[in-house]
Image (cartoon, rainbow, N blue to C red; front, top):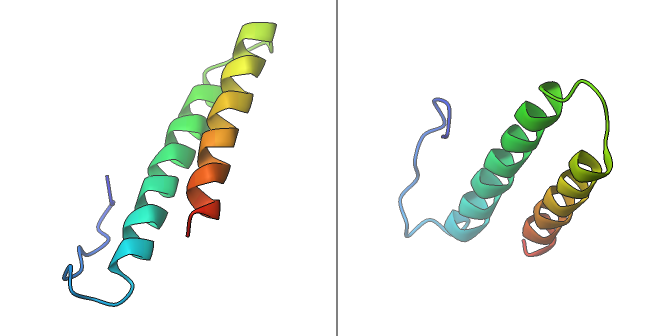
Length: 63
């Protein structure tokens, strides 16, 4: 999941932020993978895209 990103010590001051950014990265990677497989936009794919973007935004705003 972290693609060679070192896993920090949980006592590090920015550990919570690091963890949330790793989560956001995973969400973004999932979203990029999803849309790269979509040949034509549909209402269903647009709905998934918007839902996943909202989830990503929520994660980033929580930092």
